[in-house]
Length: 145
Length: 137
Image (cartoon, rainbow over all chains, first blue to last red):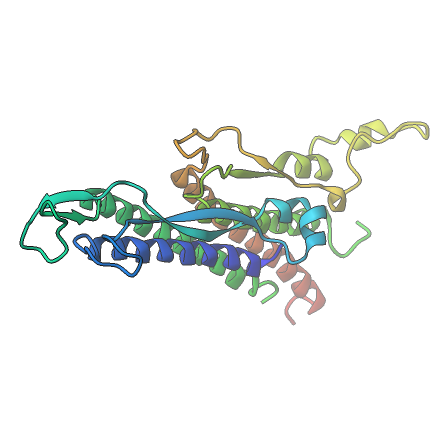
């Protein structure tokens, strides 16, 4: 257990929250997208966070109690939302079906904005944690001065 | 006193190590503040450390006879830190028990006490230096 592991853990949090932020940005940007590579409207994406023990080796993780309890966070998957798309009657739209309905992504802008604020706050919390670890390391360098 | 570094310095050295550990675990809790099913971890060392430092004088009292067994722990180096899932956290919808505000407060407090311990160590070392340099002359 050293300073670098604290910084590693905090930076994993930063990476995870940034990935989440990117996903949210993509959701907001594509709120009206009706064409995608996989066909159909854009589907809202969601990140899956997972806690990963931060041991250097398997032995570390197995034996050392503090190491076993030190968890990094990782985005293990980005999953598409399975909600049905919103149908709007727009017969003139090129992507309209035979009845004149266009499938739009089922994205709630308010929910996305809330998630975005949450991601920002979590990111800031990780920055603070990193800052105080750095602070501690710097003052430890002053021992015996 | 028969050693260069007394019990206080040893205790301070142990406490900065444990505070580093608490800082790391708290940082991990903050990093995992949004991870589903993650349980907030807690580091406990204060009681074990004060027992090892024998503030209450238990081990002196208990070894007045050769057949007596010491109640106190085997010195500061024998202190084991306890890291466990914090039972105090509220359960949220995703079964995560991290309380971000509490963790931030703990982090700030821990950093301050870490620095306090460092200052005390520096004072101890300063006193040694003063003695070694013949009172600054």
